[in-house]
Each structure stands twice: as structure tokens, then as C-alpha cells.
Image (cartoon, rainbow over all chains, first blue to last red; front, top):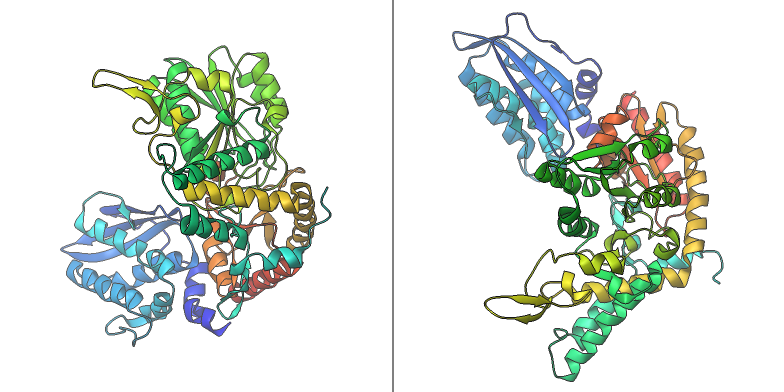
Length: 150
Length: 408
């Protein structure tokens, strides 16, 4: 099952079992909900945004291993980043998981998130990987609307 | 009488089963979502287009007469399958969803008023829920829902108590798509009829799996989809008792459903054309008839016996897998194995099984309120068709053990 290991990397399974920042941070001043109507996955992102910087970030919700690990690792990746840096990272992450599986993975600047490169082999699972990020974007932009993958 | 099912022979009738998925022979365990098609159905559709195709009813030439005759014959085949008294009680639709919408929009809108009630069950597919919910919202009526036990069986005492003077229709599934529970439809019909309340049954999961006789059941409406019956997608059926259907207003209007038209008024065609506006899915009807001939040739009793035996085998296999819990354990159920695995989301189960060539469904199975009642966000569901065998279930169990190894 080596190809399944490409998708379900040890890091992903670890974050699925023990999600990081699975909480509402104290003093959070931004939040957004995300929903994937295709599978029913739900996530909510809570931020403490100060002077345009993500000071604290946490998430709540339930979903598959890919969406849970993605949310968990996202919180670690964006903490301390400016709004612009976080959105730029989402852009790079999006390219990572949607690049054609035939070419090389777009790993520039994604850091630890490279473990999600295997998702591009599974078009049905891209939305699982990006749900938390779409929701983060809503929270950062303060639109107050539920982020949807559809 | 037909003998027991010859599975090896039946499997050879389905070309898709010869394909490979992810480098392994396909194990198709999603028949409750849609059934695969035997060669005779594919041939019937092709033959119809190649040799007999024309629009029906209005043509004065031979080809149109032949096509009309084949469409009429398909309707008669459906009547025979359901044991309806008359062919005009059989209406062709796109699918069971459209059949139910037809009843909700035509019959429902005529009989449901403010303060009235429509009674459905917790087991319903969205197709037999949303049309009634929307009707109730439009009319200021109340949608009432029969509860279920943890095993997934209807609470029949509650059902009886929920029947009130305001109940205008009961809409229930014959068999639950998500859990496989076979509902006590005779009791449902008799309790409702004692109070003069008509009953619609969604038979999408029943008709492909065992013999169904609407006259013997005594229901007022019965809906099913062709694609779940090994027939083409895009064709469905509504059976409706003639006395009710004759008084019902048309739902969709247009060509083919009229008797005469002026700019001032229209008189409508008699049953069943009144409910079949526009050119229907002609090849779909022909393909559906071929599918019905096919399953009747194998024998629905034989299909039911095979499925029951496989279900018992599969249930035992899954019960032996640690950390797996079956969802829906009614004693009387069809070949549906809905389950959850501790620590592995159903979508991950689905992906891991897919990588091993095993096709199952993961999600809410178009029954979100049911999932909520069972306190699961989703389940994985393996569902059986007449072509499945013990090897398929062995592959399922093996793939599940692989998933558990990967995650734990």
C-alpha cells in the first residue's frame, strides 16, 4: 500500500490522531465557519488578529483525516504570520494540492505542508485539504460568511 | 419457477465487471446507489436506436408505430413487474425523485392545506423528504416524522400515534437506502387506510431486490428508479391507483399530455399521458423493460435468496473486524452493510478501499437527518447486487483490515 502512504503520510495520520490547536484561543477576535456539503465536513477557525498579524489561531469541527490534519497543520503554519503572508501561503498550498499529478510538485515555500503533495493524486479529496484554508481566508477577510468548498 | 442464481453466469452478463480498477479486478459494492447494466440492456437500447427509433404517438408511418408499440410494451412490462391492475396506472418519469415530486405537487397540493399534516419517517432518503417538507412550508402544513430504534427500525407504536385527523398522506420507504431496513409496509398501509389516509411508498431499494406486488400491498402510490434496477439512468416509474390519479391535476403540461388545445383552454389526455408531458425517454423505457425481463428471467426470489445469503456472510465477516461497528442492524434487511470504523472517517475508508479496487460509498447517503438520529456524521456503505459473490466480500474485509493497519 505504498501509494496510500503517499496520501496518508505519517505526519498527516499523527495530526489526525492528535490535532494541534484544537481549541478556541483566548481573546479570539475573528472567526469563520467552513462547510463541505459534499461530505458534511465542518470546521470553524478562530483567530486573534492584532496589527494585521495572526497572534493566535485554533480550530474546531469534525472531518476526515485529510481535512483534520490540514486544519491542524495550517494553524501551526500561519501562527505569527501577517494576513498577507497567510493568504500567500494558502495560494502556494492550493497550487501544491491541485497541480497535475504528472509533473513535479509545487513545493516552494510550503515547508512542512509538503506532506499534502499526495492529495493531487486524489481530485475528490482536494476539497478536504483546502476546507480549513478557505475558512481561514473568510476569517481573515472578516466576511462573516460560511466558507464553502462547492 | 427458476432455480438458484448461477452467479458466475450472471457476472458474465455485466461487461463492466471485467474491468480492472487500480490494477485489480473491480469489486463493485455500490449497487444501492446505482446498479451496473447487463449486456441485454445495452443491446436493447442500441437496437432500439439502430432499428426502431422514431417519436411515438403522432407518426403515421410504420417506424413510429413500431416505436409506439415498444414504448407501450415497456409500460406493460412494468405493470407486470409491480402487479398493478392496469397499464394506465403506470407513469414514466425520470426517476423516483420525479415520481415523488409528481405526487407531492399534484396530489399533495390538492389535498394538503393549512394545519394539515404529512407523515414521513426518519429513514427517508432526501427524495422522499424534501418534496414533502417544501409542500408543508408552502401550505402552512406540518411535516411529522416517525422515529426509529437504534437498530434502524420504525417505531410502529409511534407511527400509529402520529396518524391524526389532519394527516393527509403517509410517505415511507419500502426499504431504507442507508441501512437496508425493510419496513413493515403492510402494517403501514393498513393502519393508514383504516383512517382513510393514502400511502406513497418509495420502492427504489425494494423492486430490484425481491418481488413486489402493489395490488397485494394495497398502497396508493409506488415510486422507483430504473437505474437501480439494472436499467438505464433517466427513467423512473410512478404507480398510482387509478381512482386517485384520475382526479389529480396534471403537474407538467405541454405536448403529448393533451387531448385538444385552443388559445383559451386545454383538455388533458387520459391516464397515463396526462402525466407525461413532452417526448419521454423512449430508449430508457425500452432499456428498463429489458432490465425487468432480465431480472425476471433470473427470478426475483432467487435474487433475494442470493442477497440474503451474501448479507449473512458479509455481516459475519465485518463483525470479526475489530473497531468496526455496523450501523443499521434490523433483523429484516436487504444487502446493505453500513458501518463506521473507530478512528477512521468514512471518507478515508472509501479512499483506502478504492485504492484496492473496492468501490463503496461514504457519506450521508442523502439521509442527513437519519445520520443525525444515529449520531454519526457519515457512514461507509457496502451494498450488494445480484452479481456480487463471496470473493467480493472477502476483498472488502481484506481492504478494511488494510485501512485499519494504515491508521493504527
